[in-house]
Length: 93
Image (cartoon, rainbow, N blue to C red; front, side):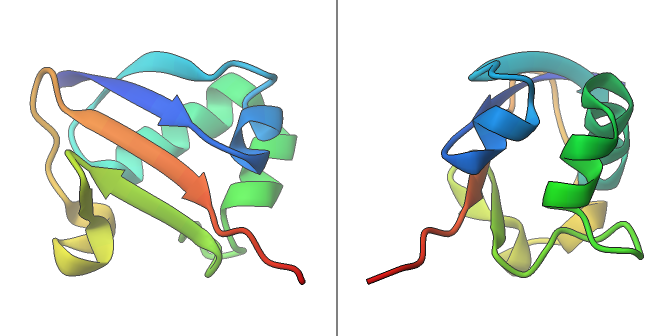
């Protein structure tokens, strides 16, 4: 397992019980999201993940400034010291 730093932005901070960042041990993004869901509860899970456990379409996740959509999605491997950003898209007029 790798120890990574997770930073939350926008509505993700609220879902993470107002913590702007945390450290998590996980092998990949899927495991990281599961751990965060356990740590922050149902509110985090409902706001960040769909019914299948995948990130909601409006939730952007970056590993070391690279969008996981351009990597291995939920199977993106994590290494010690990686930085993960969880950034819900902002919409409105």
